Length: 261
Image 1 (cartoon, rainbow, N blue to C red):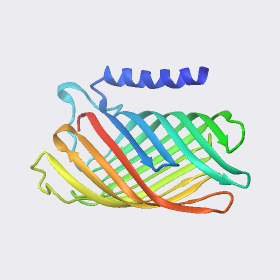
Image 2: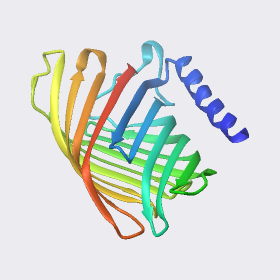
Image 3: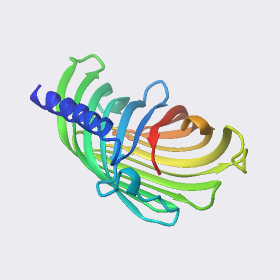
Image 4: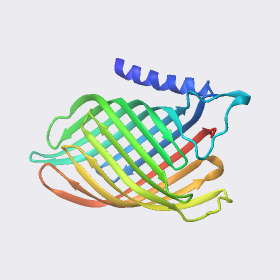
């Protein structure tokens, strides 16, 4: 309970400080989403607070050049919900695992590159229900690490890679993909449509999943908001050496509350 209170208190404190310090604050963002299918999925909501500590404020504040390099402090607090069914020698086991992740980090931004590295700490309240057995409730906790790289090849094409590791349940997640804007190429309209493709690998000792899919993104440029829709095919491997394949779906929402660049 003390760990839960500490995580939530730190997250609220980050939000409070960032909102009350509009001068150095660079942006406040909200990222949320769900991806999966009937027996496996992951949902999350993640506020992100970033600011440039040495940025000047007031009339002397420098303008941001598209060719300049900037380093930001980043704070993230993420409630999440992971669920899956694993198949072992003793039968099936349903796993339900809500969690809470808190991480400071650093973000490097240039004209083309956006690189973020965030070490942190996570607590998960995991429930495992084997077929014909008694439910087990376990509190898992440990360090985490996240890294994301977004590279803007040109004004319409983006390459990206995201990696994360959770020591609490030894779960690894990684994705690489690209996105290409196919409408509003002159950025004169309020909306833009992008398409892309991506590959994903994730899992631990209980389940491993490899996925290939497509991405459709609708961006509302005037509101700094975008909605992403994913669909593809996944292949799961289990401890009993069985393999299952099936389609997956996903949806994600991104919104920037403030952006001073």
